[in-house]
Length: 340
Image (tube, rainbow, N blue to C red; front, top):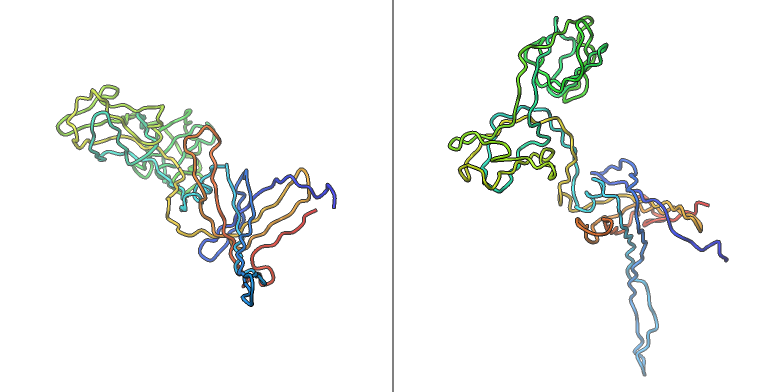
């Protein structure tokens, strides 16, 4: 008894998602502004009918439904996946020169290209190597001069000893060793012990163009534009202007360069059931600290995600605590352990 048992609750929440039949370890799911443990008890009452007034003479627990609710305010990909009952993945888009993509277009409307990270105009050059490389570079790889520190991105191998490159930084030095790393390939290492490099003299420019079979070539900032404020370059969107001289609804051909980019994707409502183990470790500024361990929890959204709001966005989640008598016969639902 006493004030030492008063508590001001703080702590961290961890989740170990069950994927298939395996667990892969606990993830700190970030700041939780609320964590509540509840016990919904249903009782079955019995009444005596032996005479006089109907009197309750027995009441037993017939159903117990333990649960947890939490409000998360770290809007991460994994947490959005929980809120959206979704699968998550990382999309890797390689560097690509696009020449035959077509879309119908209308004035005063936007269209989405098939790729993101649009490079409006780039300069393509060539890098020549004497001798056969010991590790071939492929599209999207970074090629680096070991002594000069110069770098470039490989767009494509033109021949065994020639690479098309762009985004050249610095000046490659004759006779230096080049190393290929990263990008879409796993090859790496030194291309040759003592190669000879020269910058190509046939540099060409790859520029974003929009052409219709009937309309012809459209003019940027007259017929179409990329709105920087709307992240159109990153998202791969083009807006056709209201005063555009074009045939409405015509199939236009788009020639452009898509830069290498990785981004996360949340595929909503791909999972109808999400289960995992939950741990809550308290770190109270006042009061005793405890660890709550839930063996099985079924997770589902429990409210709205405010996409536009004057307050911090939150992810309300509910967790139905399920019985795990097979692995924890003595404490099939959860345990609470005092830490200090």
